[in-house]
Image (tube, rainbow, N blue to C red):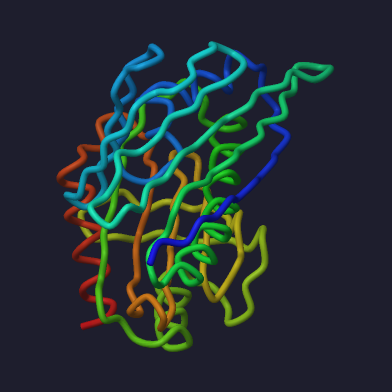
Length: 251
């Protein structure tokens, strides 16, 4: 049975409405902070596509007002579920912008678990949007994803991840991090998002790195969602290196 839902989020961003629009209404812009890869046809009635880990979802743009409003609706699934999104942009003094997000639609039988995951997930990705606009705006991005299904329970999994990043048991935003992945340049960074046992975010001079544990209700899956802004990162090479890192961590 499908369950109707609505979710609302709001964030103030240190960027102009035009810069925020570029980040939410273009494929390259969305790729710089959101998971997977996004394509958007820039016109009302245009088609869009979102692809993550080989799975694609299509949508139709239902409102396209540059610098002000973007809305799109996902195609219906066979069970009647769908997602629709609306972004509202409001300029503020001193070049800042308020971005409001409304997401609504119908979820399936496990709607409560899905809804909780979306609420927490949007907090993470809107934070990434703010970080991108502050530190990396306009830089080309390499989107990196890796996944390890049937990972250990949260406590054991986070102990391994924190150990690999040089973090203490208690993690706080601002803590120093050392990223060392075979085949990739080593990087120093800081924790910029600490919402354990669900999410951990790290920022370096050349990247935003996201570490996610789904929890037992969603199968104890560990997901990496990274945005690398270094030149010549090489998507396939970088993604393969992180997938190997993840596999060795939980071998």
